[in-house]
Image (cartoon, rainbow, N blue to C red; front, side, top):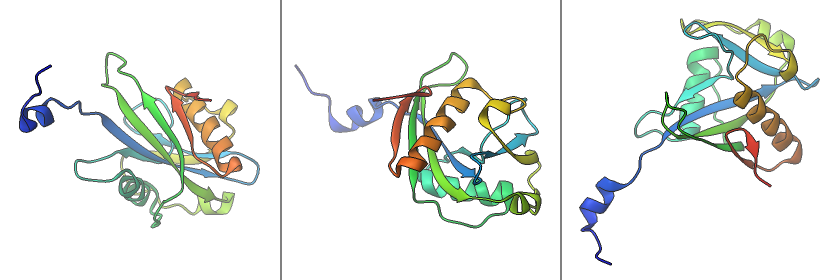
Length: 160
């Protein structure tokens, strides 16, 4: 077997898209979701990881932009491998722990990002419009928060 020159090998390495989201939840087990202006499905606060940016920095940046909350998120809950779906290339989704949030704190959020129409606390089975794989990923994230350790999943299916 012939080895590629190092520079050629590096150029041949696969590139994956990454996203970073934050799970905020209340004492009743509801999760904070945001309603984007650019698509029909609700999401957790978060978004794409920019080039040269770490997933945890992206999570902090997105939460600051979307919700006005200034915080560093270091507790990882879920790493989810997301396969190519024909529309978006394969990627890795990181979910970080945002901790507990109250109704009063949600009501006080100043949503200044034009990408976000509204925000609210929801039980996962009562969300107006939530992609099935995200709902599954969030259920795993809730279990990880209770267990106190990160979990792995593949397209919303927990690896055991």
